[in-house]
Length: 137
Image (tube, rainbow, N blue to C red):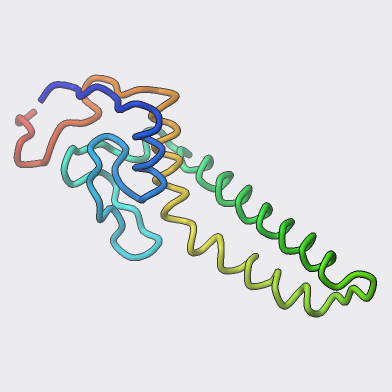
């Protein structure tokens, strides 16, 4: 199977943000909520292109989580000023700090794969097709 051209950036980002394969658009890439398959069942694209590849996904998750924490902190202070209390702020911020990274994990991974594919397009042999379509080696 020939190498497919890399989709344009907005298609890549949309596919990544919607938890689809950045190369072919295949959905259903997770086995459980947080376990991303090793490669795409349709096009064979291996998601972890090199060891440590998903450090970028951790960065995406961290930036989004900290952004939501900052927004909730500023909103909480603005809404309760001048009698700001730490307990209500913690009651809102603690669930954000715990739940957002867990819920966002698979999306952060597929989004990172899309961003990485945008920065470093497909190379020959990276998307080999379904296993039954691959030539014996």
